[in-house]
Length: 274
Ligand SMILES: NC(=O)C1=CN([C@@H]2O[C@H](COP(=O)(O)OP(=O)(O)OC[C@H]3O[C@@H](n4cnc5c(N)ncnc54)[C@H](OP(=O)(O)O)[C@@H]3O)[C@@H](O)[C@H]2O)C=CC1
Ligand SMILES: O=C(O)[C@@H]1CCC=N1
Image 1: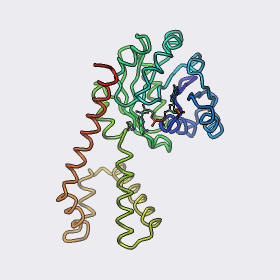
Image 2 (image 1 turned 60 degrees about the vertical axis):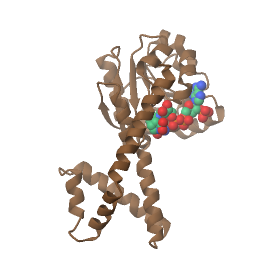
Image 3 (image 1 turned 60 degrees about the horizontal axis):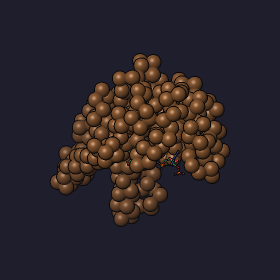
Image 4 (image 1 turned 45 degrees about the horizontal axis):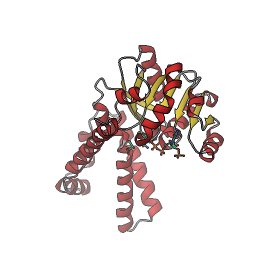
């Protein structure tokens, strides 16, 4: 693992990764996070015991790895203000921003940087993250290994060799925790209509998702077979699944994921000015 990691931005995604890193045994004193707002930083410092700074340049000065974790829309200003420090320090730069090309960020940072683009997701907080990674040509094998170790500390890692595939990663894992949370909301609402107390419904739905995910992960059977094993002929599950297929749930999911990937691509074009 790298000696010193600095996160530029200390919001939802950065704090999920930092929380996961600390739980996996990374020493909090080796991590620094920045944000413009002192009170937000005080809370994260107290909760996680890491270093914090409102000065991005100072936080980069001794970093081996700099994780860019601000919103895509402000990335340009943040990077241009960091250009001299990054050029001097030459850290491995990892951007977690959706829809921003490695080349675009590299240019904003002055060029010739070792850049990894990472698409993580928020379950990193609990060690169940799923991250897609892409490296530009400046990234050495040793730096790839550092990026792998960093993100494996909070979940699984898949490398892609074509940057455009990160848009698909965004659709299948980066944004996808929200799809499952929507499913929990919908199942809870429906179960309440069926008469269950909300808290009971929520517990049952979440535990069932956990069980299904764990089975799908551990079993040598594919999801279609596992689904079939729940569907007794003429029984209850068959009726529910038939309803979902009739309502074109698969098409809805495919369209939603396409919209997600399209949005990532459109953001990259808008924000790079191309
Ligand atoms: N949320 C998610 O599930 C995922 C997010 N991402 C990517 O992660 C990035 C961050 O998203 P998310 O964590 O959700 O966003 P948040 O808004 O939660 O976090 C952004 C952080 O950046 C800070 N910030 C704002 N301006 C500056 C600045 N000039 N210098 C340093 N820090 C600054 C914010 O501080 P303040 O609050 O004070 O403005 C905040 O701490 C985005 O690029 C997004 O695309 C990727 C995958 C999943
Ligand atoms: O919604 C977004 O734009 C970010 C990127 C992936 C998850 N959240």
